[in-house]
Length: 293
Image (cartoon, rainbow, N blue to C red; front, side, top):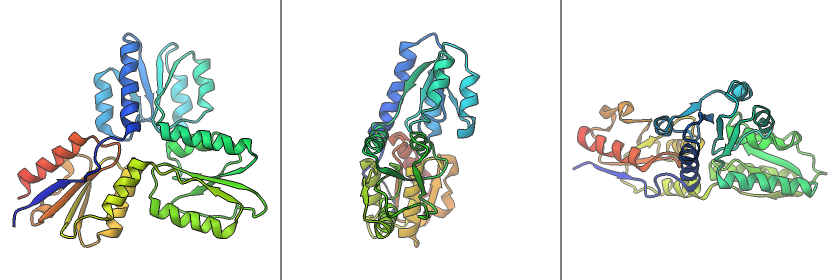
């Protein structure tokens, strides 16, 4: 039987990723002679970091606790681009003091989450935020108000919930909709005074739903992307949970593909998160077809 290698139908960049890349490239066109920096990875994909480098845009790939110092070390008058994940609002003050040109490449859906949090705070609701600890999107949301209750998606505890208070619950946009549903149910059991906004990105949800309904003859899955990418990691976890009998690989590029594990397979699905370009997936697909049969 010949080997079949297919891409997941819902593949390629989402709108928020395309938007962030366009914003960064347009910044170079607008400021051709200025130094331009991205604070953290614009999106979690080294392929994009390389593209930005070609435009003379430097990625300051430092940890969250080093963001303030990184900004302070930049030359006055240079350009700072905040990533698609959102940013700690307290950084704006430092940017202003340093007289940097600020450009925000925040994903519109993440921006919408920030607005929902602010609206709920104006209604005197207490905020519950479900996210991944130390992820830049989570960090951005928690910076809005010091009293936001954080529920760790990977290790949820609910001891901060007071049944007398009114809550507005919102979440990081790149979580598993299945696991998020379980956390929502736990919260509803604790208190009835809660409004829940399910803010999973539709592009993320579509891919998750498609993964749950792969053809029955699939015996191999190759997940492409960065392990820093939350939405890609959720796809990988779903594959591991749903298809334990399949060979499942997580790779960033062709060099990481273990051909020996794929050689005797018949139907392989190649997929990536919303930060993975369709060309990266096509390259992996063709590499497998040309070398694993």
